[in-house]
Length: 94
Image (cartoon, rainbow, N blue to C red):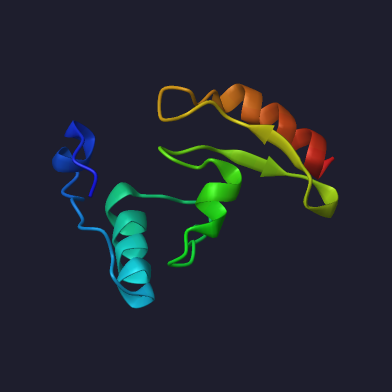
């Protein structure tokens, strides 16, 4: 459960999900409440993706051709630099 001031302000306080269904429901709630306008990917209950990408607390990635990671942000939200990420997205998208 994340209890940061912004989560409280946005009314997105969640307990750790116990099932995949709860995880999907929580992700949908976050997308709606936080106005997320990019595709959201949901990790399995084993958290393999989180461990593989060091995604906690949160990170932004740009994945290039062949699945190669071309950009990994510093931990967010304060480590996010949208302009830097934009540069890498433009390179990947041509």
